[in-house]
Length: 229
Image (cartoon, rainbow, N blue to C red; front, side, top):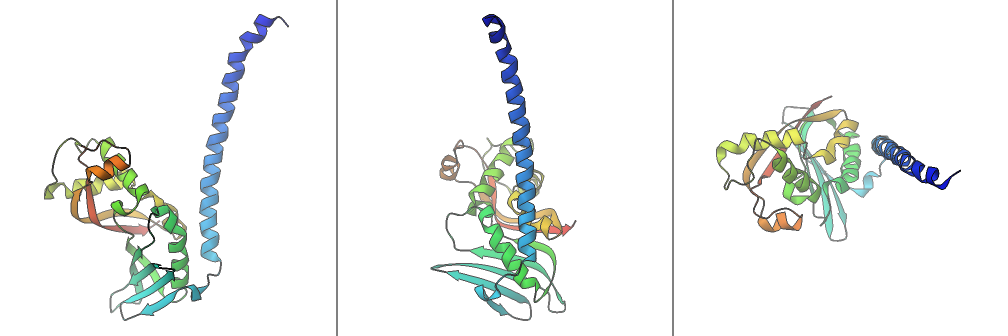
């Protein structure tokens, strides 16, 4: 074959290779998500060693705590005194430097152990505010940069903006790290309740690669309300 014809075919060959590569990456991404969901389901159905946790309870709460070296993680369920079901959980951890997605397996294990002893009908949960986790904070900042409901160049936070902040957080799904955890147990996020709003510090914005002059509101207390799917 003449040399000029071989050269002329190269661009079309490259386009074909790029298309095949793109399709492969899309399929791989979907497969990874399904595998992760299946992994969480298997963990939920597999026996968990309850002796890994210290269990304490009262009339209104059921608490699992795991101590490891000098750190701890705790999963506390709460109910009303006249109820037989637990409707709220709060997760705390002193393990430093982890993103929220790195805590999901531990939360899932604790949930599995707890539901062997108590009846859980979840209505709300707390896993910490955005500043505690870089993955949540990154999504949170991006949500306000992209939203047409918020001017990132304005200064200060006023009480009237609280509901706007909650709406933007919900619309952008800033706590997406817990989606699989909730879906595996038959729940989805309904809305956010927040208190004690402030601004993301310039040093935090710079650390994550953002313009330090941006005005990004952030709550210091976040309740995630959930509903059955």
